[in-house]
Length: 102
Image 1: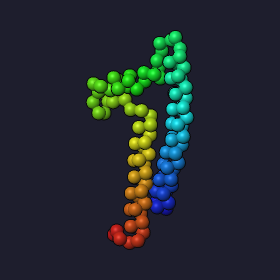
Image 2 (image 1 turned 45 degrees about the horizontal axis):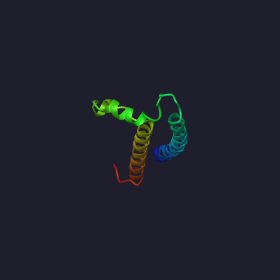
Image 3 (image 1 turned 135 degrees about the horizontal axis):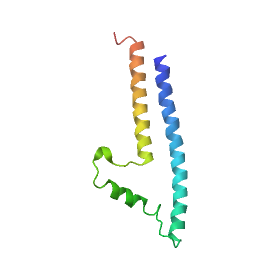
Image 4 (image 1 turned 45 degrees about the vertical axis):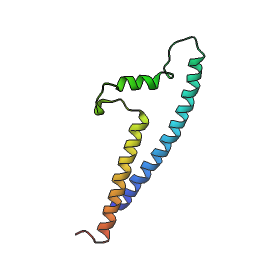
């Protein structure tokens, strides 16, 4: 049972990773259009044009643990950890099933 649950965890992690890739693509497309609109606008809002520079500036004096991360970075970290734990558990349960562990 543990082996199948571990495989399921890995598969769910992969599915959510692929969904995140699609969502990220769509958001980047929207941001590109909004940046163009901001560039052509008389308004000096600059939410999308200045976002990267603002994030770098905000993180400049922060330590490693207090830095602001992007959603993508947080999700990719979560997917990797979940996948590695799932794969590790699959290996552990297979070794146990084969009788290599006492």
